Length: 159
Length: 331
Ligand SMILES: Cc1cc2nc3c(=O)[nH]c(=O)nc-3n(C[C@H](O)[C@H](O)[C@H](O)COP(=O)(O)OP(=O)(O)OC[C@H]3O[C@@H](n4cnc5c(N)ncnc54)[C@H](O)[C@@H]3O)c2cc1C
Ligand code: SF4
Ligand code: FES
Ligand code: FES
Image (cartoon, rainbow over all chains, first blue to last red; front, side):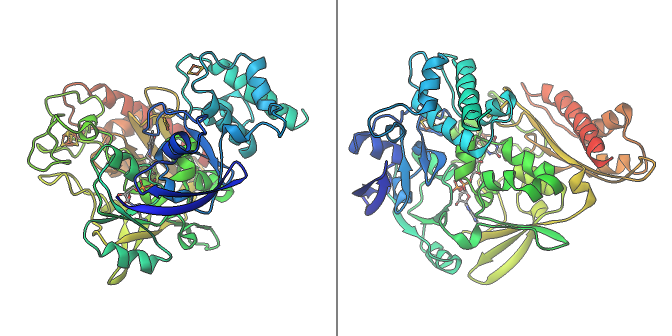
């Protein structure tokens, strides 16, 4: 076993940890840091349920070796709501637009949606669909997901 | 996963030295490497991490004669680069039509070129025989499900498809890669980077274990502007190509073709340049008939297996459609 000390920021707090070089960021988040929001769907980069942000960009945490986040800023769904628990507008839009059923894919969808809006890949529904295609939903809530992302992007742009 | 030692490289030279230790391999975005390690198909003793090397992460379009891309540049950044979108739409499209935005934020161009096949018998491990994974064990695909397997370049040892998209658009534009190793630097034309399986499908490219791709250079050409990357998939997005075509055109005043580029993806054991099809269009106008004829020439040598012959007609039409898009952009 190869143990490596890593220090990184998780949802604005510093984390110091000794990790095995084999551990994924997803496993470290879920099994050791009590942040179970990011979900394990496939563990092979194919479903998007484990999406988190590293330095503000969306990635899949199942294909991120935990050693690679040393010195970086990780944001998970737990870090999205306001300090008093008030929902982020995109979280509210998911509720308003029925963008979920079982909810398993939802943390990944929201982390991906936040990034999609920030990247500006929300010109029209076709572009939203293309740039949200890395997040699969077994319940088939895609129409609601696109609507929630579209609505939030428009509100943010003041349209 | 097999235990391994991890080192973060601080420079290209440092990475080359670290690669000298036995069983050492590069880690960039990890989206192929770490994935295959989880499946116990890649079993490095040491991983040399170059993801954080800023010296490899750039797009340089200051040169009048070529576009220069750092091997560590992320797929998403290059896809969205304004210069690339305008002057090489095919390259931008081959990037954003690949994988997902999450993966593209992680994955590098160098890693993309050397990604490994998606053949399910290769990825599936035991009990499937696979000459690429375990030389001499046989090939489960030859008599198995070969719907996604290669129409060109297969052998009696392996018919696995090269799955990448970027290499196809780069091949159409005569890209070269710059490689650094213990003996210094050398240049390899992209057309010579990947090799056919023959009797040694475990060998996929001409680089040695301690060489690093540092840069990709693409000669600038008017055909770059008049280009596209058309990718046909089982679903609209986020899937590997059943077949793809990178096309580029330069047209004379009267609309006849002066320069033509056609490369095929998703159908070969390595990226394929359809030179005879390119030649067939020189001096002619791009019409439904000439575009279709070029597609037919491109697929003339295709060797289907049991379940993949439908991709020949699909490919012919993809080439024809991609030529029409290139024509619109070149006009
Ligand atoms: C779910 C999924 C869907 C995908 N869909 C597509 C798709 O549609 N189209 C497509 O093209 N790709 C697709 N990919 C593949 C993906 O694009 C590649 O895995 C990625 O580009 C590899 O880059 P990386 O930086 O992550 O490489 P790594 O995984 O880190 O490395 C890949 C290989 O290249 C070697 N390597 C890395 N960098 C260098 C270098 N600079 N010099 C020499 N060797 C190097 C590594 O040692 C390793 O062998 C998909 C992947 C996944 C997981
Ligand atoms: S086609 Fe190649 S990769 Fe697939 S099982 Fe056969 S030998 Fe292995
Ligand atoms: S669990 Fe990471 S993409 Fe499915
Ligand atoms: S809401 Fe059930 S998987 Fe998406």
